[in-house]
Amino acid sequence: MPRWMAIPITWIDWFSYWVGMTVCWLTVPLFGAMVYEVVARYAFTAPTMWAYDISRMLYGALFMLGAGYALSRGVHIRADFLYRNWSVKNQGRIDAFLYIFFYFPGLIAFLVMATDFAYLSWMRGERGMDTAWMPHMGPIKTALPVGIVLLLIQGVSELLKSLYAATRGRWPTQ
Image 1: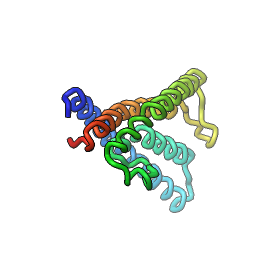
Image 2 (image 1 turned 90 degrees about the vertical axis):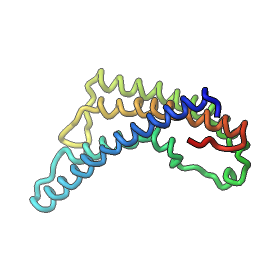
Image 3 (image 1 turned 30 degrees about the vertical axis):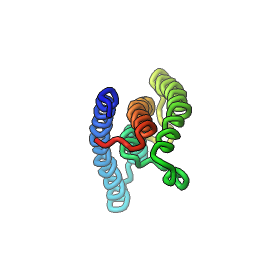
């Protein structure tokens, strides 16, 4: 693989791996909050007013911030009933085309909207209205544009891998 491809692919994949391994630790407080709520509710008849919001926020952050890692590992859903039968060159060509004309433009549009969404939440001091706790929504809404940026970064690596496959007829190995 050419050095100009290998260096960014290696660095971006390493970065996505590091982010994924860090973000996965959000499952610990998520699990703890849910266990605490179940015990408080059913053992002591004393439900919390925060567990529902905390669980939604932690899972939302886990989902968005871990999306780039998931893309790097190839675990996003793919309807590949046709794709898997194509040659590696055609797979690379189709992937590169889709990344350039759909993935990046779509995520950039989504990033613009999500950034505005998060910014307005911070400026207005938006609070959640689902429970009596009424947490501030700015922090969780900020996870949306951050997660999109992580997806865009990983998308660069995936595009480079697709271009390599389209020209060489094999997927790059690391």
